[in-house]
Every structure is written in C-alpha cells, then in structure tokens.
Image 1 (spheres, rainbow, N blue to C red):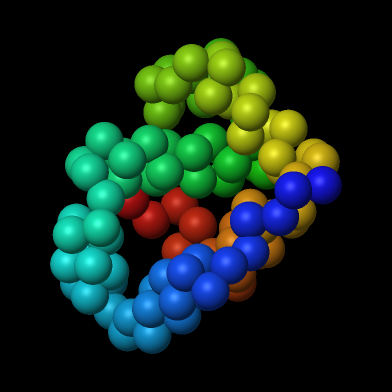
Image 2 (cartoon, one colour):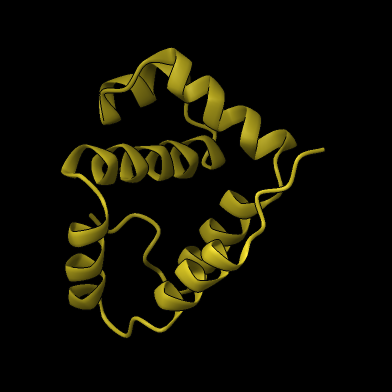
Length: 101
C-alpha cells in the first residue's frame, strides 16, 4: 500500500499540533487553504460526527448540504479507514465540543 508519510507532511502536522487556539488555527488555515478547501474539510467532519450518531444519509444531506457521494466516502473512512475520524470525534466528545458550530 502506498504511504503518504514524508518529512514535509511531518512538518505540516507538527505545525498544526503547535497551534494553541482556535484563532491561531483560523489564521494558519486561512493562509494554507482556500475557503472551499476549509469548508469541504469541515463538512466532512460534520458528516462523520452525524454518521457516528447514527443519522441517516437523508438527514445528513439536509443538515450539512452534501452529496450522497461525500457521505458515502466519509462512511467508508469511518468503517474501513485508519481510525482518524473516530479518534478525533471521540476526543471532541470527551471535551464536549463535537456539536459546536
């Protein structure tokens, strides 16, 4: 299986881990990504949270305004991926911030 691990990605992830506030995240990600990329990533996380809560595709489509293809891709990652969504959602729920928006 192809790996994406690299020094460049390590540096990116270390930079992200060193951010200390939501405002710092906004500043960094607004410089790093386009608005569309940020919105797409936030929608995918929203979909993952709703799927983890057992919401139906039709309910998610109404709440997040995404296609069934996006929901299906996120669902596949939740069920067969590396566990990243599940770990992030678990940590958000422990901190009581999974449904902040």
